[in-house]
Image (cartoon, rainbow, N blue to C red):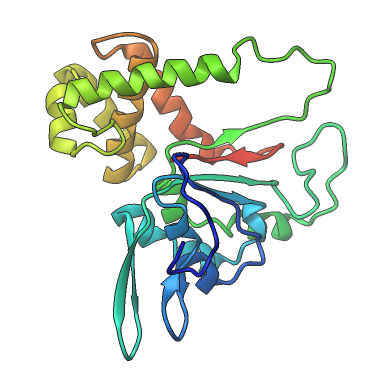
Length: 257
């Protein structure tokens, strides 16, 4: 924050950044004549929330690809080259079209098919490939039943699962950050389960990156189920989550990593 010339006190809470969709590529990624950190570095070890993802320019969003992969961003200028950390959890939300009603059963969409396609293509395939899952939401009324689990209960459950993963890997690593070799060695996948995931990825034409994400996601689901071994139901649920990006219809879409 000092390098970015922001006044912010010390805090034990992870950072949370929510840049506007009109933010420039430099403010998001970092840079300038005298390079300074951007939003992705200010969100290091925290959350970067991109609301109205479809309103960001495609060029700006594509610049997230390398930082999301490596956890750092390198900015090169004539006088100097600097590298800033940028390991963040990305959460994004967007409407399915410019008017927001594509696929809705309650309102009529006024967008042309070309407008819908162009809007959804703002998020390129490589960016979608780096998301753990995409969730399609539908509108709900205020009278509908609230979630039965409170935020405090969810936080406690997540904390228990994180402790379990720290113990499994013998370090501060989690399913999302541990090396693939160690994940495969300790996660408890059987040969039959690994073959099943390989076949599904081949049939769906998913990349090797997606296959590794499936393993990480399935192991996390099994942990949340309280299972020490890898379950077939956890693998099936992970596969269903990965299929969702191909079903862009109605509601907003969320994609954390």
